[in-house]
Length: 342
Image (tube, rainbow, N blue to C red; front, side, top):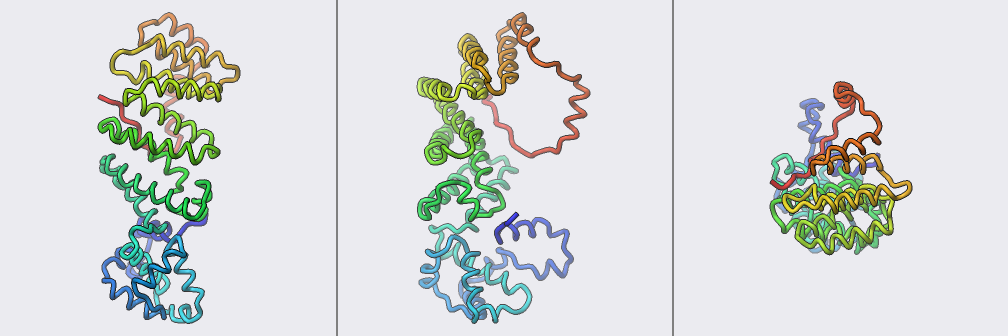
């Protein structure tokens, strides 16, 4: 897999324990560059045969998407390449360009700046500061859209092909949606931000991955529900399910908002009606999951007879002991779960 310099440097930083002390001492990191003044960074560039000032640098920035692209442009200059001698000279050249870009062109984000802020968000998840993560990632999203507009990139795959980051944007947008939902449980601002985010995604990327688009639709409607705009949310689901009636989790999501996600005023009748409509669709996807949700609804509404009738339609499930053994064989995937309102 082709990774950017930024991603490779981050991997080296995280795997330092696998290197010898001498190798670690010779490494150059972005923090090493940040410890130097602008004057010292410029001096280093001059030692590589590159004359640089802020004005000339800003002119260069408009030509490239990353410090890595700028690095290769300089590396292909014969007078520069012959001076890149000594340990880690090439790493120093790239590091100087990264740091000067951060300082001199903060409003013209580089791929390195995007990759770092994206990963800082993942690191912050360990501290459970979801709102801070969302603020960081919404800034990243604006940067990404800005670059896509300026460079006429139409799809997230187009962006990822050039970005080659630690995390693919295609994966990351799904985490953004989820964390905005988590933050929205405590702060309605983030539900509004989630509507804006998922709405922008649906407008721009409606022809991309079908399942991701469906999840964005659910999040868009769910946020309207939680903000009290049930009429809009219901209309959206009715429209989407008319266009895509096989969408099993669409029926489940639409039903959930009437009873499972309600703390009060649960409308079991409406939830049941939606699920049974979904089950009546020929070749509906995730049919077993719809039935399972219907069983849950009947149990929640204290209708054990109906629950048993529908449960009989589900395939036999293995004893719990077998399930536990099977689960232990599956590699764990670290992923946060959505919080429920208390």
